[in-house]
Image (cartoon, rainbow, N blue to C red):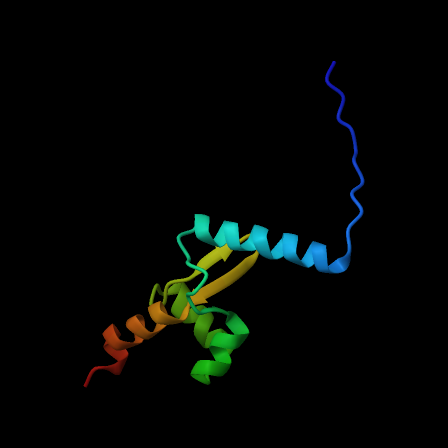
Length: 93
């Protein structure tokens, strides 16, 4: 029979922070997002665009802006949001 064992690892808060940052960076790279890319959470995107959260969620659901889901969190690539805005029919005369 295969028993699962529990291990307790002791580390400082700084070590834990580094470990979490590395894990998130790896997960983002696995999704095709480079570290240098400007990623924004929805609140940051709303502030940057000066729109409500409901507006961003509508744009998301309508497929007007691309987004990435990492667990329960949603991220936006700033460059892709800019590209979407430039090509959007809402901005054309």
